[in-house]
Amino acid sequence: MARKYLVEAYGCQMNIHDGERLAGLLESAGYEPTIDPGDADVIVVNTCSVRERAEERLFTRLGEFRDAARAAGNTPVIAVTGCVAQQEGEALLKRSRLIDIVVGTQRVKQLPMLVNRAIDEQPGPQVDINPHEDVSFPLGLARRGDPVKAYVNIIEGCNEFCTFCVVPYTRGHERMRPVAEILAEVREAAEAGHREIQLLGQIVNHYQAPDDAACDFAVLLERVHGVAGVDRIRFASPHPRHVTGRLLDAYRSLPKVARHLHLPVQSGSTRILAAMRRRYSRERYLDLIAEARATVPGIALSTDMIVGFPGESTADFDDTLSLTAQARFHSMYSFKYSPRPRTLAIKRLPDDVDEPEKTRRIVALQALQREIQSDLHRQSVGRVERILIDATSRRRLEELSGRTSGNTVVNLPGDPSWLGRFADVRITAAGPNSVRGEVVELEA
Ligand code: SF4
Image (cartoon, rainbow, N blue to C red; front, side, top):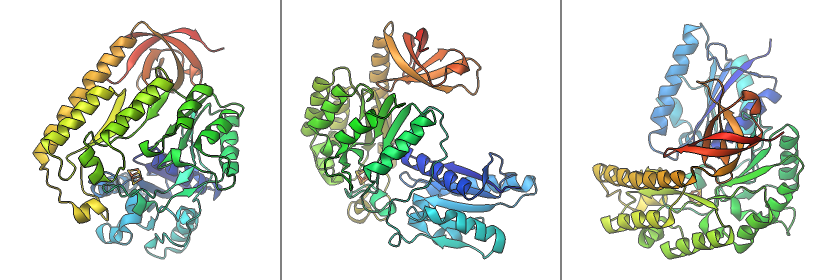
């Protein structure tokens, strides 16, 4: 009987996609998927360390897995992968006796071998986090969890070293994937029925093909656009420093590229942006989004914001509020600053905004953003929008959801067989996080 695996992944889209690749690696080694810890021979937790308390959450989850497995009389091998594994290495074994394997972000290809060894030979805890041995693109064949969208990595790692960010330390230096490989994976995903391709990279718009000098990110979009079966293209996340006129022009000339730009700003204060080492000013960012809106009318913008960064005064925070009000983002991920291990900020900048003040700021920012989103959504009521239906509801039969080109979530009644089809829907009601619609015309 085939051995079974369970992979759980947290964090950003890249981490979720790494989970799909870990699943793919285990399947190519003969393992089959299960969602039951009581039935799994191996449980893999792909961790994210971008936010605080990642380790506490990991240990809690491992305890839950152990209890569920024990209740079924099972003792699966437990492997921890991802950024927490890379960052903490052997230290994780000292904190939890439940862990059998720790694998770093650049060593994932070793996972099936380590799991087989753990099951067959029971050698005791195994750790493989060496970031220097294998700096090639750590690919596995992805087992895609989503029937409509397919993530495709184009860049690994990052060289920006923003002072708050742990990614350059956990994922290593920036490596570009050959365009031939990217297109082969896009073709394979499209042939398998994935109509939406999401290109992923820490700074996705910094792409330059190592195997084709003429292929930068704008050209890559053009080539992905030309693949039969691809009907919508998204990408995450670009860096404002690398947004070019050519990229904005690509939106205009390539209709399958969704009219949405997620452009992390992180703060509205030029002083704090300098301390974060973002290398653009508030004014430059505002100019950039004005240019994006002028070049691509109707483009929806979203962003990431951090409050309570070291040294952030109330005046700096007011700059964040005023930039938010001015930019009118369609959505925002906002976070309270927390020092991350090994970063420049933890070494050099005291975490001097106290917790109650960080909370006050995040509450104020989120209230403002909620107001803006509600207003933008209200304005869309009565309009007809084209959506790609990409999810069914787990709780209610005949309840679907899809996304507009601008990435707004539209919930609608419909038949589960409509999954993966485009539909023109009339927006009938608006909430802060999504809108409701009804189908006017369904793609044949
Ligand atoms: S650009 Fe900055 S925030 Fe983004 S991954 Fe690189 S270091 Fe982190």
